[in-house]
Length: 230
Image 1 (cartoon, rainbow, N blue to C red):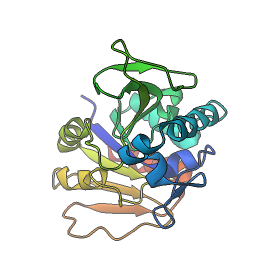
Image 2: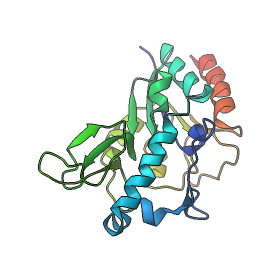
Image 3: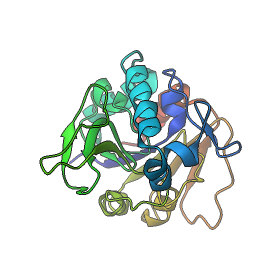
């Protein structure tokens, strides 16, 4: 039986493919205040702005490709039972070939009803004012905004609790509740933390190995270390 590798990925792995992300230090995302484009309040205030913002992100996504980091994680399925838990809303893990992916913060290529969070559709093109669900409610991006519940969190916790290996790639561990997942790893599970500027993880009981590289190079090193361990 293959050992279970659970991987938490963040903005760092997609940045190498050319996807820009906001940084908490300035609160800007592609020149916009995140409170205007990534909160329920921003949506209520100016839905047209929010739709345009994510329409532009969707167009950008079509012009980028998975990088080596995404590809190696997909290839690791040959030797491990790999589960990706991602904070990213892009589909680069899917396109690279990973088959078991949990999106904590939603998906850019899906929409949902503004009134019924369970009404979700695949969506490749622009969302416009006047695009409605079956009951006449405006469609919105299928994105978990700040101050909204994270529906996939329980699934992510359950996966983390079963991990034989746990890897953190390209995330600052500053955004909750995703950052709390590390606390659910079994205490004997080794943790690999890939980030060129890692933070100190307080009160960590697990064996920890920090790999201070960008995501793609760090994942290559991770593969070498994991394959030696089996």
